[in-house]
Length: 128
Image (cartoon, rainbow, N blue to C red; front, side, top):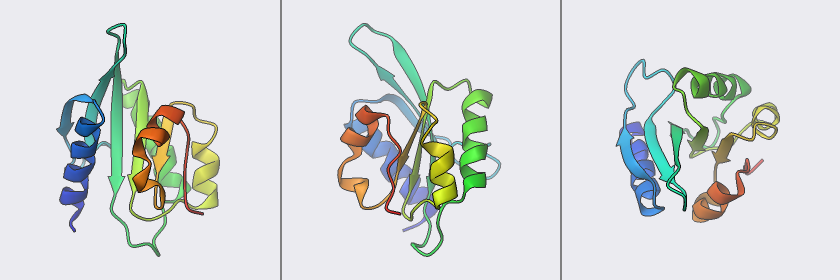
């Protein structure tokens, strides 16, 4: 699988979960965003999500610096929430960045089969 395909599959997953206006924006110099999407609640309020996708070998974990940059990207892109998706795992230091950040969701194996629960729980999940 390529990085682009991973981003496309993530966008498809978000659409299937009810996100709207989903678009893949990932490219070189994308300023930390691969997918943009919105979720509309029962009152019609629209929440902007940005998504960073990292298709990594399982031996190459997401490090804290990548999470720190993504947290900064939330502000740069005027996003309400962020989702960081990886095919690998997060280092313990990266989890320390993600766990206290209530606007950030992290998804990594083996949690790919639970994307709806991860999203609704506003949690940071990893296979550490």
